Every structure is written in C-alpha cells, then in structure tokens.
Length: 354
Ligand SMILES: [Mn+2]
Image (cartoon, rainbow, N blue to C red; front, side, top):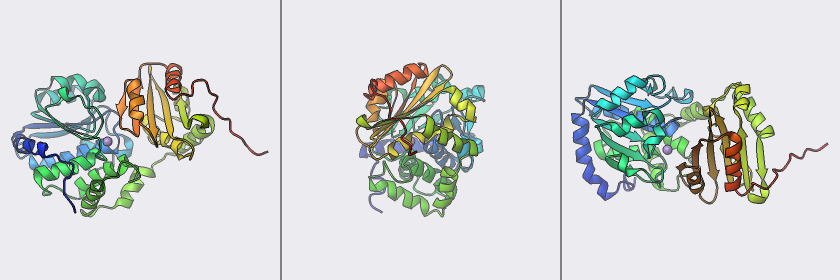
C-alpha cells in the first residue's frame, strides 16, 4: 500500500492528539449525518461509532443520530438499530446533542442539511468535528474541519482518519462492512469519483477484514419492491423528458405519481442516473414534489452541476448535486428547464414501430 493516508494533510496532524484526548475523556459522544441518509452517511456514521465504542473508554454513550432515521435499505448494517431519528425521537436527540462533549458531523458541510436538528447542533457546546467531502463547507459552524471534495466518500475519509487517529486496532469486519458500503455507494460501484488510488487502497484495506463485497452489493442494489420496479417502468415510459439538442434529460414526479405507486424519496435513489445511461445525454435531473416543496437531483458526465445546484440554493459535488426548493413542482420545473437551457424546447416523443 502506498502512502496510507495520502489525503490527510500535514496540517491535519496537529489536531489528532487533541481529538484522541477528547475521545478518551468524553462522556457523551454524538455522531450526526444528513437528512435522507445514503450509504455513505449511514456507513461513515456507524463505522466511526463502532470504533468510538472501543476507543472512548469513559464514554457513557456513543449515539448515532439521523434527522429522519435509518432508511430501510441500510437497516441491515451492523448496529443500524442504534441510530436515533430526529423525526420520531426529537426531544431525546436534542438532549443528547446538548449534553455531548464531542460531536462528529459526517458527510454534510452545513448544519442546514440536518433539518430539525440544525439549531441543536449550532447551539451545542460540544466540540464539533466535521468529516466530509462536499464542496464549500460552512467552516464557522464547526470546530475542526476535515473536508476534501477530491475524496471519493466520507467512508474513505473515515477509513484514513480513524487509521491516523487510532491505527487499525479498532477495525474489524463490522467496521469494514459499514465503511465499504459508503465507498461502494458513493462511487456507484467504483464507477465514478474513484480516480484516486487511495479509494481502491481503502477498499483493499477494508476487504482484508474478511467482508463479502458480493453480499454487500446484493443488499444495496437488489432491493427493489415489486411496486418500485413498476414505478421505474412508469417513470421511464411516462415521465422522462429528453432534449437531445441540449444533451439533457429529466424526470419530474408529482405527489400523485408517488402515491399511486406507494413509494417515497428513498425509492427514487439512483433513478436520476438513468438519464445519463443515454449515450448522447450529458446532464440529467430529477424533480420530486414533496409537501410544499420540490427536491431536485442533478447529475452530469461532463461539466459541473454543483454550480447549477447552487443557483437553486443547494450544492453537493461536481458530478452529483441537489437542492430542496421552496416552490411547487411546476415552478421548480420552469426554473430547472431555464437553468438547463431547455425552457423553450419540446421533449422528444417516443417513436414506436407500427
Ligand atoms: Mn458522501
């Protein structure tokens, strides 16, 4: 293995002794990740929590918290049942955040990404350590920042940072399964965001703890309900708008579309990537109506959708970004079509042979 933590900057090392001391002296540790958690959010939080259980000798509690809980697709992860939900256990989460000595913030760069827990985090007296790979973190909201958009995933970052902090003494199969999951999901199965060797070095290190990548693949990918599969068919045949002249495609779903199939936001995870499966399409979007607002996901093969997302009040990565817009589906669709330069165009119609 080459330089074990090539991403860990020399400047970062000054913080390690302090963090180790804080971990060993903490009584209450909280780990937080973002709303609508993905594999990287759940994996980095649990992978870190399982190590802190062992490292924090005096800790009374080590508590992972997600704003709207652990999604169904990731409940198989080791100790996922420990994750508290801000939505259904708000008072308990607020109290834990308030009394925490140490708070690890994983896979998000600004407090607004944790929704109803935002104020609790901003008011908390505990030492806030950010570990993240999104663009433009709000540095004033955290005490120590480990943030690098060139890293594949927060799980990779946690792999190298925890190795730098504790060595690999707390690594085991459970930790490795959690961290491998985020590495796997944030790179689309090692397809993108993995041009740096360190991504594969992290994967190699984690696989050496006797985990089964094929089993993790099945648990992540082959999870569709029958309704979700029918919804994908409906989405592709009825809701896909293609603008070849602008190399752009998008989906837009009303609340009614979602109710009809009995599916929610987590069921659409990954659907936006279907736009990019068309050879000529370079930019894809997915709009999903929620109560009183519309979520937008953006993807691209070339260019920078983080810039587009920023114009909608959101952000993310260069090739994958998103925004939560306070407008109706129709209004948001107008704005997105303007941003993508397809406002005056008609989408292609499906051409079928007779
Ligand atoms: Mn991530």
